[in-house]
Length: 138
Image (tube, rainbow, N blue to C red; front, side):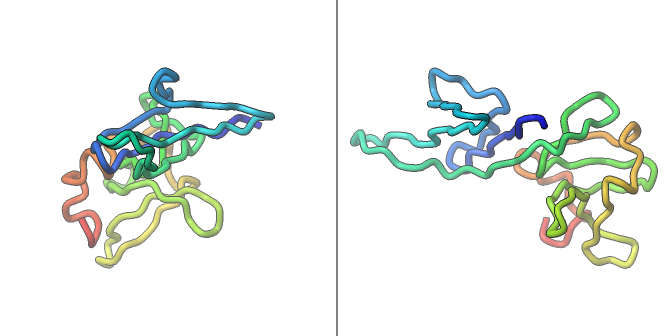
């Protein structure tokens, strides 16, 4: 079984971190396959506080260009001429969420699309403009 891989959206600095974090800046400890990352910073008075980050897990899937697909990525599927963003569903699988032909938010499961044709075109944090008209809350 492969080790889980993550990226992190830093809400405070509005930057994407990872998946390979700088060990000089972030304390990373590993024990029996469990990775612990110290996601703390110091304020101007030298006190530690926890960073406000969103954890984004690698799906284990790749787009047509070999790019890793993570939660929160915006993916275009030419098979359906449809754009959605990656979510982890309650029934333990990844899906693309976006507006359906019925006008409501819907899902397309990764088992329903040709991965060798889809393409990651951005993510919901750095490129929210790509979701205008695609999802209700964009």
